[in-house]
Length: 53
Image (cartoon, rainbow, N blue to C red; front, side):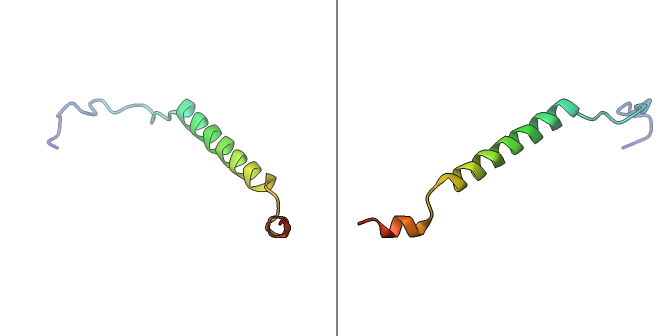
């Protein structure tokens, strides 16, 4: 870009970090991981499934 195009004129004082979005995303991933882990651990072992007539 040519100098003086006005896109970052003047440059920002600090980079903006979307903390709310990052925290919401991290909480969603953690809840999903906990749900998957709970679902996987709540099933009966395959040996019990095989022993049923």
